[in-house]
Length: 329
Image 1 (tube, rainbow, N blue to C red):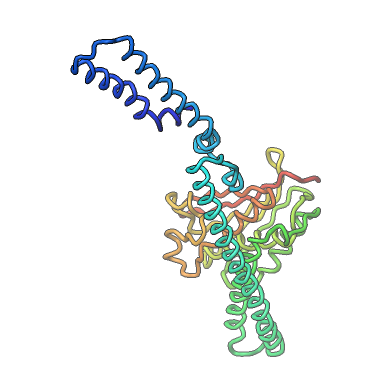
Image 2 (cartoon, rainbow, N blue to C red):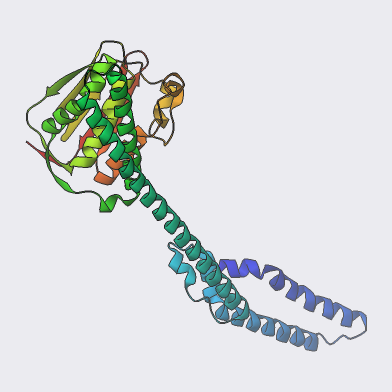
């Protein structure tokens, strides 16, 4: 009703002025019968009121739809009435909706094709990496064995990051929640990254507060721990310090904590470290930083209903925690 009155405010105000002007003109022309003039003005106002009532009734759905914001796209397709303007607006909205659906479907097809290509490309790249791995095993005394091994590990980690980033968009089709022994998984992830520890002159320290079983996806959780652990090693490289990985229970939640004694993160960057492709000040010092590791960890945690926390002090190191609400001992 309010929108209707605002839309017809000028018309409503003009009607009394119009009839007053007519009466004044007749009065100046010598016509002095006020009763007839008042009756004519009454009839004019009555007809105007009748028109406004008809207009409101015939356009009620139209004004209601303009007043109440739709919560879904389908609500924009509801009937607006059969009057000329609402009907024309309904046709325009239907046309725009169809265009939007076509655009979305095209974008989804392109995105699906891109993800399929990335998955296939990653798997194709794993074959030559496996051949290089076998070649290194057959020639362990090669002069460039250590350098090739280091670059091979970097390639492997990069391909895994690309693969998991592509799978993130279809997460619901690529996860399986089960009971996981958290300490055992931590030990396995550390073992898988032992060469990176050795090359970086960083030493793992593991602290377990008993046996903790959690509900999560083993593959995704291993990926998240690898990302966090890799960052801890990268930003601690060469300082001969320890990276401490702890599992414990606090405030009713199971926790896996990775703490390094590296360069730390400037306070100005802390609020943005989980943003995609954000590397911050450390990204200028460590050119290998992509800004995707913590972003993927954050996204995967949200999908699995876990929580990730980060604390850091420049010059003292960084602590990352992943918290699990579903656990048992």
